[in-house]
Amino acid sequence: MRLHYFLALVLPSFARNWCPGRVPSPTSRCKNSTFSEFLPLGASIETVREVGEGECFGEDTYSNIFYGALSNTNVCRNAQDSAPCNYAVHLPTSCALIVDMGTYRFGLLMPTNWSGSLMTVGSYSYGGGINWKDMWTGPKYYNLATISTDTGHNSTPPDMRWARGNEEAQKDWGYRSIDGSTKAAKALLGAYYGQSSLKHSYFSGCSTGGRQGLKQLQLDQSLFDGLLIGAPAWNQIHMLPWITKLATINPPGREFSVYNNASEYTFIPRQIREACDSLDGVRDNIISRPDLCNITTVAHNNLSCGATGAPPDGCLKPEQVNTLIQLYQNYTISNATGQFLGFPAPEPGSEADFQVYLGPGSTAAPDGFDWQWAIEFLGYQRGYSFSDDIIADAENSDPGSATAKPGLTDWTAFNGRGGKLIIYQGLADGLIPPKSTTQYFEDLRTAASGTAINFSRYYQVPGMHHCWTSDNDGTRYLAPWMFGGIGQQNYATVAQTESILGKSDSDMLTALMNWVEGKGAPNSMLATTWNTSTTVFRKRPICPYPQRAENTDQGNIDSPNSWTCR
Ligand SMILES: [Ca+2]
Image 1 (cartoon, rainbow, N blue to C red):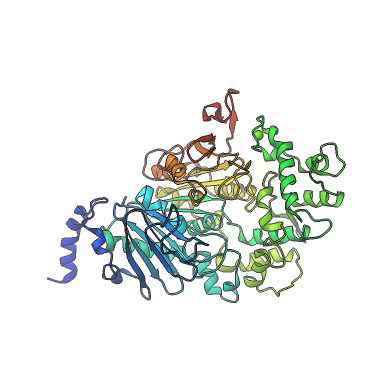
Image 2 (tube, protein in one colour):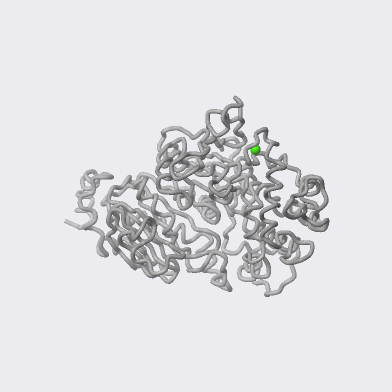
């Protein structure tokens, strides 16, 4: 009998018996020979290792492997340097794999107790390396096989020297590594679990991770069934020039600049928050309506030296007041054909994050990643003079094809196959302005012409910073921020994480998976923040855009029952 006839007869019954959660001794299959013939041409297994219950697995920036028991709550026993502590912790019994695909690598964790589905976890900024740190909740709480790619390089997030003159590396980072790694992983799951059909494929990413998911969706609507996308850096070609524009408005260390010292990071956010908190109707230290906050009025009345409402611990000189106001304006470009929006303004309330772009010792010019981007991706000379022409150059080249374009995404195909997309965005995010994410969602709705409600939801999260957390009062985060987005678990305790994960009203990944699996579309979700490890401070609904949570019964503002989405 010819071999493929033999396999055709044997495999169907073989597959029927090997259901998720009933895999016969899968750990015994955790070895090189199980996988090698299922790899794409040119790929190879770099590491394969069994991971025991409660153990950790990962690697440092030099690709040294960490594994084994935890030496304390969150430290991998064999970790040689704990910063960055890039490993998955608290894993269930799993098979861990590192695959070398040639120009990029990926890690794959396959839990013995498998749900039958896969999750791809996204990356951050321009950094490389497999995102082990965010991978643990997939196997641990959702029984998901979980992968992450190094995107083709190893570097710290703001370091872009890897991209210089290397279009192939730019493309690996831009889109190829997510596509190739996920496709390869799907084949390896079949080899390991002995099951020909994968139930579902999910993606969860924030920031660059959000961009990766949306870019993949533009290129291929069939790779993922559900995507959870946070604060996506989708608009590379307009966003990076905007960050540089900010640095030209506010060069570090100048008389007219703000955020030159630590005190300005204390009193500027505080004064803005105090001035605009109540505009949403509830005094709770959360600016839920940044659109009602007039930064010009606040800058003159609440921050200016000599003003009635000036802060007691510092103030802004007139030229600094003007600078601050300019930072909140849309980046508008003028050319021969008129004016157009280069990039939308950030929202009042997101000052706590601004240090990354603007502060002393930040990534600001001339070493900031925006300046680096023009040099390493666009080929500008170091010390170049900034002008608005950079937008046209960026549009023409779109280096690495990294920009995700909702108008070029086939939403009909995604909707037609039952795909689902949830996007979320902190309204106090100072790195990805909320209006940028809203712009993506509005463009999606236009492109999908009336069908967006079938497959997409967008949640704005009042007070939440970039991807996770919110302003804090020294002991707790003030705005509810935790709802199962990727990476949020690293800012919560295990007890806090376990109190919300798996709950369809409090965990967006669970809500997404339920939606994909036909168990109902998500409506309002609950976000949570805690007083202590186990005591909830506030739970509050976050609402599908364009709805907002309103305090309808004047009751306890810390209770979700006092709020309604409207
Ligand atoms: Ca408020």
